[in-house]
Image: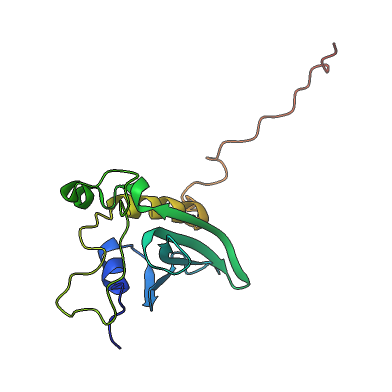
Length: 164
């Protein structure tokens, strides 16, 4: 299989999320909690219907019946291209700021990926927090405590009920 124009596999490898995952085309799918039916899907967020530029990631939680939540993480909000854009003299609000463009078709083999220069630290942090909300870790019970050691529920009051 030839690499996709967006070099998605390399991008998601760089993102380095700690989940069992696969990249199909330009989309990342993961299983953050194997015991749960929900799955995580991440795709590039297009700035326009023609997919001529991308300015973020769409992160979604999927159930077997379809999506239940989606959030867009914009590159500008997560400092993904701050260093690259500063070096190019681009400022927030400028055309091409915090975006990348797919390469011409067919892409040159020696060309860097279209997202070259991306710092994915902020994106990784945001995705990890999102996953912690939708895929909570299983509750770990301390089975070493016996019934005598557990705090008991306070006994009901035996005094007269309060009145106003």
